[in-house]
Length: 83
Image (cartoon, rainbow, N blue to C red; front, side):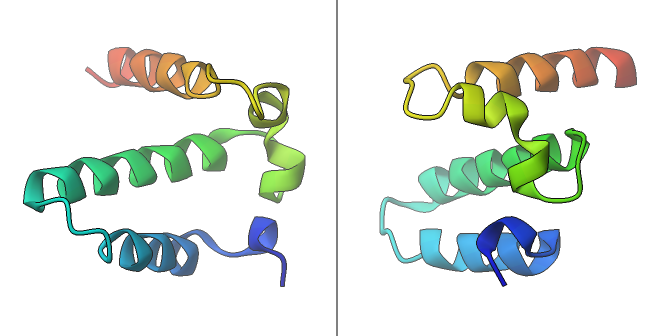
């Protein structure tokens, strides 16, 4: 199965396990966990059944240092509507 077709929880667990191998301290691991969780939330909210079909915003920014901006804007909008 391609990584773009994996279910959220197993993929998130795999990413978090890999990130735990980097020894940068507890605070860095907590930030990485939050960032990966938010990334997965953002991808899940995009239209389509897989990351490949859902990641229109992602693909538009691939290879660009600003790739994180659509995700951050989505998170801010989402937070504002929840609060």
